[in-house]
Image (cartoon, rainbow, N blue to C red; front, side, top):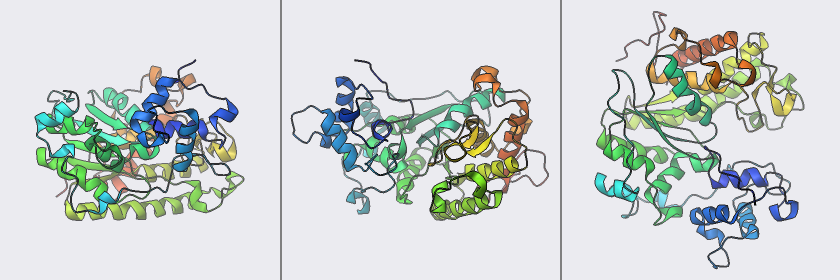
Length: 406
């Protein structure tokens, strides 16, 4: 039987979602082969799926568990769940006593199989970064190291990611600590690294139903070991579902409409970040990918995105579009725009100052995006960063280097 490995940035829930997105069960359609080993992996992560208690996960049980999560049900659009039950433990004043974060650094490391990722002290100004995230974060995590390499340094980056909800800050805190849905089964990938090595920054991707508490736990833990750390939350760019009804063509996706959708997202995640900054002054910032995508749409309508054919492939049917589906995953080439936003925010420098081109070997087939489009991406990223009130970066003198802020 053919083995289908988990994609790098997708956890079991997202993988189940991808398989069952049509709404039909695997047993009925026979479209995908799944090995017993993969079923065993799912069972290890989600023991509740074994409804008959025989210690094995069948295809029928996997499909039933997928339906319980609301993924890919008949008559519904597949994809990551947007509403879900959160363990009532989050309402309590304290996490369980057995949570891994309560252990000593040595104990946390032991709980991670004796592993604690670390990087040697980098050159001045280079940040050692840990991060969680999902498929919206994957493009930036993929391209940031290549961008930094072109800027003349290696980016120390250690992530614990997943697909959809499995990459959220809440989910990863539960998983790393072995609490709530992961009761007694900790996987402290980042906790071990944070407690046993030096880091300067942490990054997250947002998710539906987010609360400040899902980030405060990470911040408190990081600051315990590294008082100087800073924290960055990527905002969520506009999604066509905000319109209420998916349009039949791209005519309604004007620059003005997308800008309005972007303002809605800014208000939503701006409130979250402002709440966190009230508790941790000068510590929490936004990675303004939303503003960058709004600017990209504006420049597309002006004919300034060389090689880009449309706005949303699911609607306009153009392969090289800014977004590739209704949920909002980025289209080909736009992983570089997100990576430039990450770079510009973290390092308070315009990507336009990077003299080198991105190596052709890491671009899309056919060298896309080309030099002209790459140049526009760098411009857009810097403009999005310096004009966002919560990015922590300003450039009053226009030299491409962030001004010192109080």
